[in-house]
Length: 426
Image (cartoon, rainbow, N blue to C red; front, side):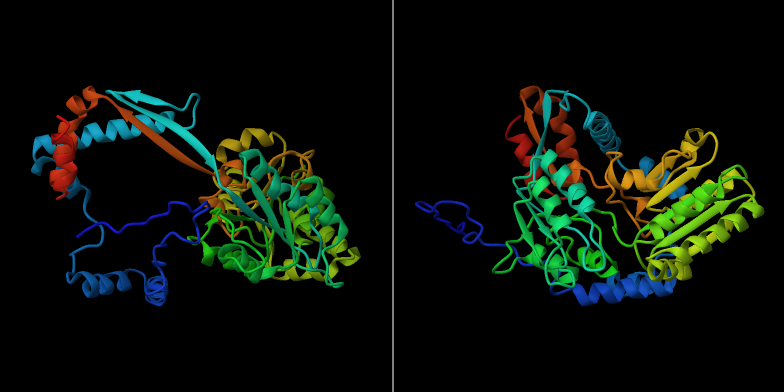
């Protein structure tokens, strides 16, 4: 079958409109996949067994393969294959061990790999609006994009009651050098940035926090556009307090995050029943006096907790399970507890480092993972706006030394052209 010809002679770039695009791989299977995921979530192992029988036509005796069987397989396959696998494992591990460290290049066995970071061309930033204004979020989203080298940065903000974006947010856009600003918010803004419209040209990456509709929209467009892995939704805080912690500081720091609005979390974790009662009373007083009382009451009603534990280790265990957006260690020797912290968007150590400092001027980003995504995700950073290419160079020695392992692995995987590409160079 002849190769299809694409003759673009005489046509100036960019070529986005004229190049054929692969079909959306999810269109025809989206509903089927959603049904499978729903079933697995509801039925667990029973669903896995039934679906394996349905799609694979077999019923394995156990879902988990015994470790003894895994180890025995090494002895059943040819020694040549084990050697090729071990060689590949060493080289893959060695490359990733030096990945991201200066100078970032890897050279071994006649192969040189260069690390080439490249910024995306166009980034979309979302800043909440409507209920409140967040010019600081504009800065937090745009700064790492600019540092990464993004050429075009656009901003979507919901209109306020007047039908326009407030001046503080627009001033932040001016300070940050935003290229385009759009007066649109919610899931519709995420869709516009992901897919493009006649007015708003699509972007390559979407970042920024929002309510649960914005966060879910970002989740659904992921794949059509780059989305940071964090679910940046309603605000969360876990405050760890001991008997010595000033109750007024613990209370106000709980209220700081709760005042962002409903659906968030405000947890106090302590091993002192007296301190829990003291802080809870102080929170009640702050809520009653706040001009944002409705938002505070909504958050406290559904996500406000005082959690009593046996001690410091248990408090950090609770915090790791919650995996909060903000974790405040309002205890003596806070930095000594950092080895116990496994999952949190950002950690604030001691009485003089409230989360509000991080919200504005500490330096690190305040766009943080929520909804337990801190288990696998991090704060927004410049790398979220970059791709990382690797450029591989090799010489004849590489083919001589490494080629046999390639041939062995390709043959096992049933890919004869892969093996032949090495043989032709030997």
